[in-house]
Amino acid sequence: MTYQIKIIYPKEESAESNKMTERTYNEIIEGLDNLEVVAQYENLLSRGYSINVTFTPPEVTDQGEDADPFEIANRFDMAGIPYKATLKLKASGNYEAMSKIAKMIEAQDFDYDVSVKLNIKEASPVDFEKEATWFDRDYAKYTILPKASSQDIANLKSLYEQLLEENLKVTIALKAKVPKDDNDSFADQLAAYPDETTIAFRLSDANIYGE
Image (cartoon, rainbow, N blue to C red; front, side, top):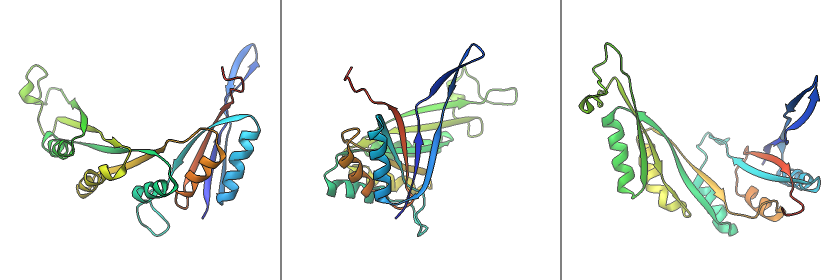
């Protein structure tokens, strides 16, 4: 099992021609196994950095299957790692289509936001002053954003599967609730993720004085 890591170093300022210039430096390392990734993490900590870690599993596994967030969450559970699961949805369309999605979300007792983009021009039947025209199939586009999260991914499973059946782009993001800059916690998280996961290390200078 191999991983890719991306190291995002703190911005560096330098004076050039009486101007302050900021420079960024990123490093990408591919083909690392579990122990090598942990060694990189420990090395960065030893160099005085604080590390904000983001795990991005592949959208499709080596077997051609979609990455399974429920499997990752199950591994968190087995390792005793608390987490927050958040459903992410990209869905937009006419009023009728988004109304159907809204009813699915409501049925699972989750909140959601809806925004509308009205295309108003000479040939458009939409009139901003007349609310009844805001539902035109061609000139009104609705976007829906569910607010669905839980500390147990099982609570999102039914809605997730329904949205997949509608051929919508839906994912579940997992955020482990673990101590920051802790070797053991990082290693436990890493073990839960599949092959070809990308791990981003965003570095900042450690606050050694606790201020």
